[in-house]
Amino acid sequence: MDRDLASLWIGGQLGEIEIASIHSFLRLGHKLIVYSYDPVPNLPRDVESRDAAQILPARRIVRHRRSGSPALHSDLFRYALMDRSAAIWVDLDMIALRPFRFDSPYVFGFEDHAGSVNCAVLRMPRESQALRALLAFNEDTVGTPPLLTGFRKWKYRLRGLGRGLPIDVWPWGSIGPHALTHYLRETGEISHTMPVEAFYSVHIGQMERFITPGALTPAQIPDSAYGLHLWGGLMRAHLAQHHGGQVPEGSYMAGLIEQARRDGITV
View 1 (tube, helix red, strand yellow):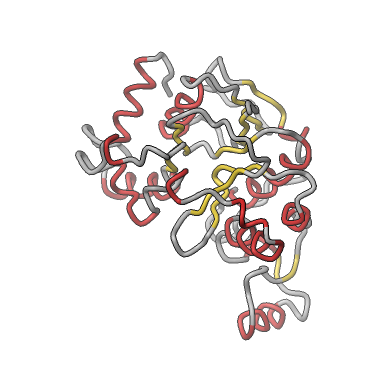
View 2 (view 1 turned 90 degrees about the horizontal axis):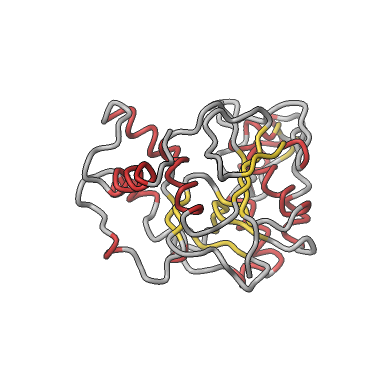
């Protein structure tokens, strides 16, 4: 089944990771919609731009207080997208290897063999009980992360004078993969999860394979893979710390960037 693909971009120009991701979808013939609250200066011309406020009106961008990352807002947005559109959400650090055509109304995959579900690729039907639970989160949420139990949960409530704490101080992933996994298990919808190989055959702990020359070749990627998650935040931090922000030549990532350039899609 063909569905539009959609994402959200917050923060100025797209970088090489995002351009490579967008290119991978366009070359497979997908329609890609990128929502934003402000114009994206270098959005490729074949990508449809839409106002993010159509999906999630916002007084402010919700950011993790410690890191300043807008990942929290991205989580809220993708759940609203499930409720207000038929599109499949894709992170802009996902590389498509074959068309994202799925018969199931549920599209998400395990990120590891321990049973954690990631939301870099996400589609849930509007009637999903797990989605309804996720939609309860908003920019003003105060409480305790769903996965916390026992002493840690009590500690959160105590620090918040019995109410808990604002969502922007919760641990990373609390309303993203952790909450998604929690509610999918609670409702039984986790049975719809695709295997690790679908999107996450390169684990986050192996991210450096993408940027180490010779460490990853197409022959090493499972034939069943629909895409590869690049773990973009971690990759950017590693490149800045160890490579002056530059992608090493001869790496898998460098090949993706070069392919996008050859097809006329550049930063």
